[in-house]
Image (cartoon, rainbow, N blue to C red; front, side, top):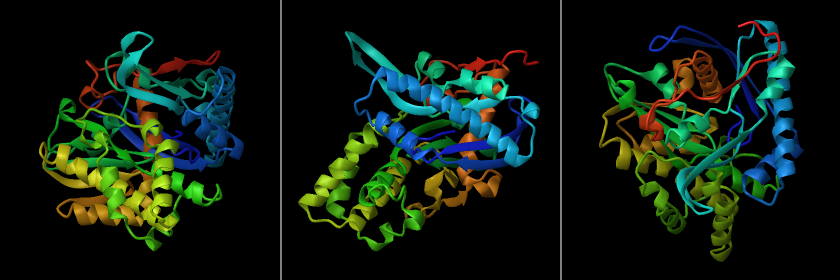
Length: 385
């Protein structure tokens, strides 16, 4: 898994058996390997929509395939597991463009698209392991937004007959899966609430001139004060008022968005720590707004289970707890999957379902007209089924 924060390549080793509704999935091990600095810079630049060429995108696609393959083999080495014992590689790839909403394009009024790179044929060839990748287009072809896809796994992990739960993932973008008490799969709904770590990380990279990738333990944000005028302006974003299903990405909350905050800061002589504190509150309060606007009117929620890098930000977590006092907040590690491993774990399960020819999107979460078998399978030569 390589997420929108572009932190690195997450590798989860997962033991899976069974079939829905009784899939048994256990995380055996997990690691994160950093991107080479030049590759990370190129991914951020291309995903921000800066000038590029088809040649650069093509080269990045194959280079990432090589890096993902090396990551899988390095994980096997560190975990002391022979690659021959691995049945499948599931690779989400790296998103360089995602537009879930249909819009006019070249005379057509209804085009939506997504593009994840990291060539799976290269992964399959280098590892000699059957590889499943490119999960999102099948859902979009069925009329969905291609995101979020993790709700299928959230439902398997967190469904409860007695009380409702929300799974919150704080990656570059924040997203929620809402699982009412005793819910059937078709009653689950999910959506992206807005920025997760993306805006905070962008500001930190700018202020540190690239020396820091994120605000570790909210050390910078805790030194700042919130800027109410700026926060009020940011919370008027029309995205927050748009009803689910909906998805967001770097197109909305990437570099251009950060430039807007920085310009506001220059006009009002705001300190870097104040801007970062306000961006941190934006993440937390946009999630709270989503709860009051879209979740609590539809479901009674007792627990929220948090994963992703933002789960380690004490300012975000404290604000969520203060603003949602009736909801118990847990880290996903308390229920078996560490916060940083959750998405990689989820795409292992999705790859398993694809290989067995079973649909794994939840139309109530993505807006698809029907369930879809996600992904494409690359089979290496002479691989026994």
